[in-house]
Structures are given as structure tokens and as C-alpha cells.
Image (cartoon, rainbow, N blue to C red; front, side, top):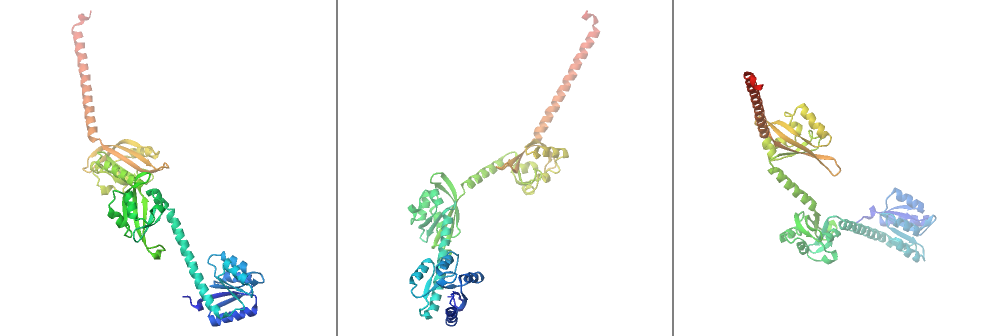
Length: 421
């Protein structure tokens, strides 16, 4: 409860004798701290300099009407309460002042002994009303935020009966708020998720901070995946006791993750080596974020040794300056690279790899990552080399055979010169 010694009053009255008498009385009998002003202008100056718990305002002032001041004060946020002081026969004015926002009124001819208590009770009532208004405004704002959230919001009482159901919940589950109000949330949600275990909603509706991913059947768009999280509500938060459940649509995220999982599984079982990098100004300076099992096996590089490194670090002993220049010329233009790379593998041998590097672009066309696919063609190259050598030997043998035939024919002609006549 507010002590009187802490209460500061602003008395606005142009009658010097009355204001001095009232100030002394309120100071001595009431224990109030009273500041006196004799005009509306002076009142505003005092309000600019100090804070007051109440204004005692005379109805008739030399530079303004008390009613006008009451109206102006009512427009201000968190303005102090006003107690209007009127003369005899001004009951209509007093009633109008109350209507405009004054909290109380007294007549100058009244018994002022009750004034200190009236001031205390008026300040207490005004403070209570203001706190109630602030709490109501806060609840309305919170309700507006919840109503307009993109996530579905369901609030229940302690018995699990629905007390709030926002627009997103109506769109998502297909029920209007007035149709589900007072119904058990577990029954409504179970209808949207027939494959979910009953215990799942029991955990959500009785736990604080519980999080579950669920597959539901949407009203119009078919199956979807939601991430549901529950929060305990209590009176200290400005809500009735119960539970608040947020349902966030993670369908796109779930499908994208599923696609990534399938892609990663495909990469892991691919016979070709796969290397994925991101960041950096080009492929050589980008950082490795993924390599598959085949890449590790064919290159002899451990997974832990590859992650986080750059291709230039990984292939620094394998690329000649000419090869590096060829890489940069093709990739520097934002294109793909296709060629062969000779690389020393874990056992020390030099293997030949067919390598293809492709940039991955965002929706705006910016390169975000690179995918490199390489295939060990060492055996293929060796076989091609063997075929090439065999073909060369056959061609050489054929040339020798042709020369032999020519020499034999020439010798025959020399030995039998007349046969040609």
C-alpha cells in the first residue's frame, strides 16, 4: 500500500488564500507533499518538471477551464488522476468532469476532513484501473499476435479442453474455433492424426517443453508434417492455467531432408567418388563438407582428414601448374570442368581419375557450393595403353610384311627380266 509521505500532489487554484489553506491542511493532516500552481500554464510547467500522483484542479482558472484541462489530460498516456474542485452549485460541471475523465470532485464548501482519505482511495483506484487496463491491453495484444501467427496455436485449460484456436489452426485442421471451443483437444487432434499414438497427445497436453514431430492429415492439402511444442500456462503469464501448443508446418523441411537423406544414401552406395564443397571464391578455396565412401577408398584419404580442407590442400601434390591453370580457366567463368587428374593415392601409386566439377547455384544465380564426381580410370587407361601398343605392333608388323612382299617381287623381276617383254 502507498504511504502518504510518498504521495505528491499538484494543487492548481488561483485563489491564494484557499490554496495556501488547503496545502497546509493536506501537508499537516494528510502527510502529502503538495506543490501549488495558480494557472493552467503553470500546471503544465510543473508536470514537465515533476511527476505527480494526483492533480487537485480548480474548475475556473484565469487562463483556462478545468473541463478542458481534464479532457487534455485524459489524452495523455499514464497521466495522473484528477480531482476537480468546484464551487457551490456546480454539480453539473462536476458530473461532466467525471464523464470526461476526472476520478472525483469536491466542493470548496464541503467538509475537507474526508479529503485525505478520498485522495488515497482515488489514487489507489486509479492505479488499480490503470494496471487492469495495461493487463487487458497486453492480453489483447498477445491474443492478436497468436491469432495472426503463421503457426497453428491451440490453448487448453487444465482439463485439456480447447479455450483458444487461432486462424492458422482452423485453416490447417479444418475446424472453426466456435466448433471446437470446449471440446477435448486430444480428440480433435487425434482425428487429424489417426496414425499417432494416443499417448503422444497426452504428453503434449500435460507437459511443459514437450516437442514431437507428427504426421497429420490436413483439411485440404493432404498429408503434412508438424513440429508440435507445448508450453505450460499460468496466471503469472496473464493467461488462465492450462497448456499452449504450437504447431509449426515443417512439411517442406521434412521433404527436403528426406530428399537429402536419399541423395546421401545414393552417394554413399555410388561407385564413383563424390566430393562436395561450399564457400570460397572458387572451387580450389572452397571447404569440403562431404565425401562419400568410394572417394575415401579410391583416394586413400580418411574422412576426418578430408572434412574442412580445401581441394587445393587435398590435391596439392597431384596438380601441375598447367593443370591448375586449366581448372581455374574453366571454373573461373562459372562453368563446369571435365578432365583427367593424376593423383597419388594412399598406397603411393599414381592413379588416373576422370573428374567432373559442377557448380550449384542458388535461386538468385549465386554459386553456393560445388559437386565433384570422380571415377578411377587407371585400369581403363592401362587397358587402352595395352590396346594402343598392340595396335602399333600390328601396324609395324604390317609395314614389315608389305616391305617383304615388295622386296620379293623386285628380286623376282630382276632374276627374270625377259618375262616382262
